[in-house]
Length: 47
Image 1 (spheres, rainbow, N blue to C red):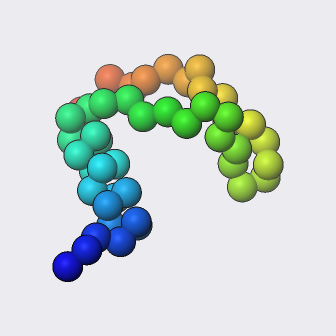
Image 2: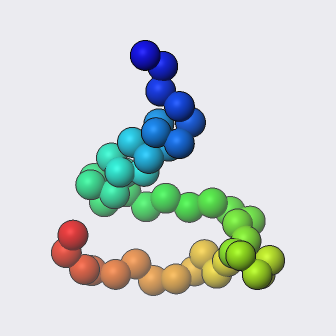
Image 3: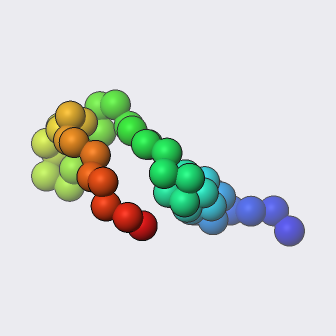
């Protein structure tokens, strides 16, 4: 059975989250159309 795009995207994001890898999307915008601030500090929060 082939994986759909949402399922495979979730699997990639979940694996990255569990490995604590930083994901970024340069040029991403939020729901209001504003450019996201990619310079946010990473938290030291435990997962």
